[in-house]
Length: 91
Ligand SMILES: [Zn+2]
Image 1 (cartoon, rainbow, N blue to C red):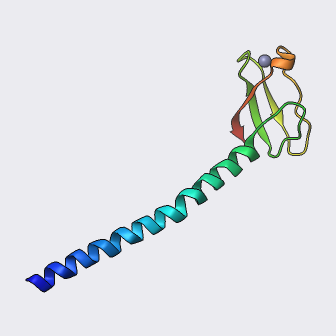
Image 2 (cartoon, rainbow, N blue to C red):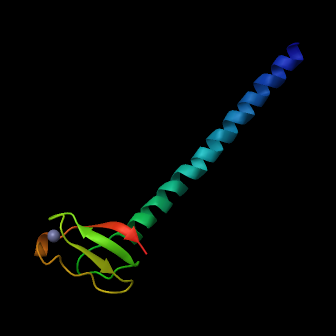
Image 3 (cartoon, helix red, strand yellow):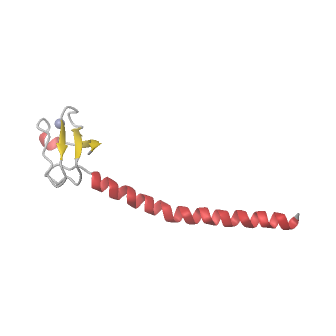
């Protein structure tokens, strides 16, 4: 009975260490993947698009345009400098 108890406690600690290890590894990894995806998907006026996508201007909410990979992203015809795009569809 005592031996079994020890084994159980031992198992628990090992298990916790394993979870900590996985979290220590996965959290920074997940954050870096997340930020690289966000940077990749960012649609900035005057910069080149990194993806083919349909984007919508969130400043007016009216205009949506198609951007193509490597093409310069143009301003919304309504909003000009205030243009802010949001990706609505990735192609
Ligand atoms: Zn607009």
